[in-house]
Length: 422
View 1: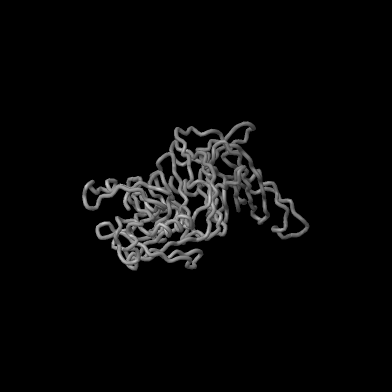
View 2: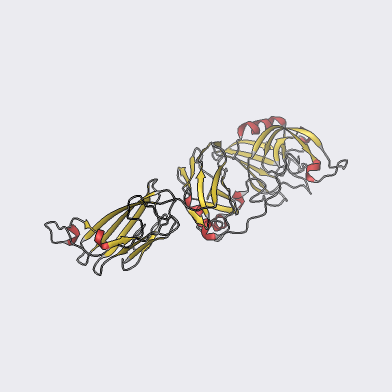
């Protein structure tokens, strides 16, 4: 018997088969009373197949090699192969058109136990079956790729992306596909979504549209023990579970100087506001609430305004809801109440009365949406200055996945500045 082994992990291609290797040939058939071969009880196909896994007790297969199953006989052929480890992870594979050979196309996990189910048929069409089991040994990895999911467990707004931080950079497209395939996001109710490679060590996941209100989102990784590349293997990842609350969208029209707050699609409050004045225009586009700070010291020097100039400031600001790391907030601006609803006089933030700012502060949570339209400012950055993910259209977003398209060059991260402009 050929004692060669090949292993990978997940999927199924060609001729309706799935995983691991096994070879088969033709042998006797245990028939029932019916002359139709399809009604026969499957015979033991052990003599009709071979596979490259270990056959001696105590020996373990090399997880760095693919799994292979071969038909051993002129009259027999393999019809299906399914390989799965003890955790329920399938191994992807391909079956040749003539049924003579099946080989894995995804990596095997190290220190795992696999069960391989092989289906065959002889020249008369009678079915054969064989179940094989084996264990894989350790790998010789020099590096382990661990994954950290974000945000922390909790309840968020419907705009909150899921993030995955990798402990090692992954640049190769094929390796990215291995990683991405192992990162699972499941939501209830189910929605269409995709990962986007922000850079070599960071991915963001979002649905096509905002998350549904009151959804549950569970994130996990099947990467542990999986070979990603030469001397790079998947490590552990703590699963994440988050939920969403009501859908809160605050639509700010900078030209009309008004913020309209919607809860689950219905207007609940309309607030007169002031946005960024010429030279300090508020960013257009969708922003996601990053944090809420009851008091923030805002200084003009943090955004390059010289002290002593007519534009300089240094003051405490109350009920500040942050939407960018570079310093855009929705906050109380009692000094500009006279302009709120009629003119834009801020340095980029959305200002409103103290009472309205407190109401807004108490109403929103991290992950809620603040969208600015009709400002003369630039579009919110997709990455690096908060969560501008929703400003990337869905076609381009999918192109940033290693599984659904060719990644686009992600914008460079913007320095994360602490409290800044008013």
